[in-house]
Amino acid sequence: MKFVHLSRLFLPLSAALLFSGCLDSGGSGSDDTSAGRIHSLGVGGLSYQTASQTGTTDEQGTFRYYPGETLTLKVGNLPIAEGVPAQEFVSFLEFQPELREALKTPKVDTEQLKDHALTEEELLSNIELLNRTRFLLALNWTEVIDDGEGIDIRTRVIEQLNAALSDPGLPGAVDFTVPQDEFTAEQSPANQLLASICFYEEENPLCDEPPTQAEIDAAPARPENDEDIIPEIFYKEDLESLRDRITQSVRSLEDADNERAREYLKRELAGISNAISRKYFLANHVAEHAASDTGLKAINIQKIGGDTELSGNGLEAISKRPQDVVVQTWSWQEAEVEYFVDGAAGGESEIIINFTPEDSYRWVRKSLRVRITD
Image (cartoon, rainbow, N blue to C red; front, side, top):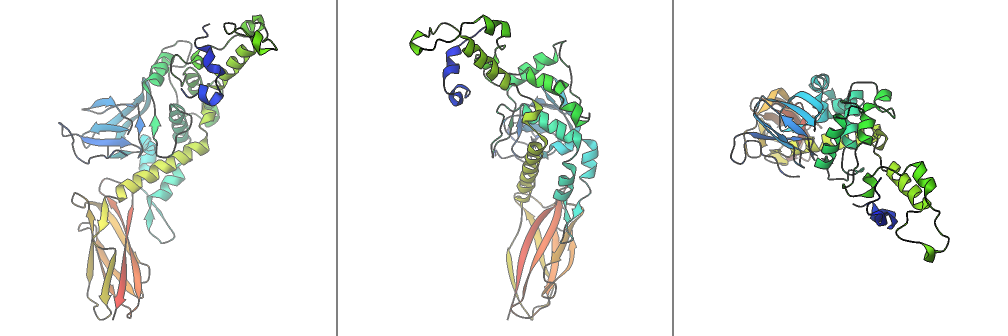
C-alpha cells in the first residue's frame, strides 16, 4: 500500500478535500449538421452516435445530428440509451420509448389549457427514469451540482468506469429497469461500479486503498507530546483517520436519492421549456381598441430568426374576461388568433395563446393584454 503525499491529509478537512452556451437551430461551423443538447444545462462526457455522427458531448451537453436521426448514448463503454430521436433538446424522459409516447398527451390545467409540464411531473415517478438519473448524477465530478451547472462526467471518471466494466470481478453492465430496492442495494452492479471510482485526482491519497486493520494495529501510537512526533512515521491514529476518510469518500447511489433526482429533472425540464419559449413572441404585449371598434383583430405568433411553424392543431386561446374581449377563432397553420372587443370603455382582458412548436410536445404560452378605450 502506498501513502503518497500523506501530509496533505493533515490540512483542515475543507482544504485537504478540495482537490448557457447558445445552440444554433441549423448547422454551424464547416458542416450542415444541427446542434442538439442533452438537457438545458448539459450532460458532458456522454459518448453519442447517430447514423452519420459520432463524438462526445461537451460541457454544454452538445451533440451533432441530421434531422430524422436517432441517438445512441453511452458513458464510456456503459450503454445509457438507444433509439432516442435527435433534436434540439433531449431530456432523460425521452430516453425511454414509453415515456416519449406519454409525453405526447398533455394534461389540462385549471384554465382548461393543455400543459405538458403536468404530464412531465406525473412521469417523474418512473422507476427506470429515477434509476438512470440517480446513476448519472452520482457520476458527476462533485457530489453537489450547483445552480447553473450541468452534469460533468470527466475523462478520469470514464477511464475508471471502463476499467471496472472490464474487471471480471465486477459487474459488466447496469440494468436500469430493475426495481429500485434491487438497483440501490449496497452490492448492486451500479453501486459496485461507483465504489470502484475515485472522484479526486489520481495523486490524491483518497484514491489509495485504505490501510488494513493489520497495518493499523502494527503502527505505533501517536506520542502525547507534539514535540515527540516524527513526521516520517505513520501513527496508528493517522492510519485510522486515513482509512475512515477513504471509506467515507466512496460514492454510492445514496448520495443521489430520489428527491435530488426529481429536483434535478424538474430544473432541467423547466430550463428546456423556457429556452424554447424565449424563441417566440407576439408583436405587442398590449393592444388598445375603441369600444365602437368591434371588427375582428388578429395577433400572430412570431419566431426569432425564422418562420413560425406549429404542430398540427397545436394552438388554442382563451380570453380571461370574455364579457370584454372575445376570442373568435385561431389557426395553427397561420399561427394566428382572431378576437374582437365586446365590452364598454374601460374594460380589458388578457388573451392567453397556447401553442406547440413543430416537432415538439411542449406547449408555449404568450399573452396579450387588450384594453378598451372611449
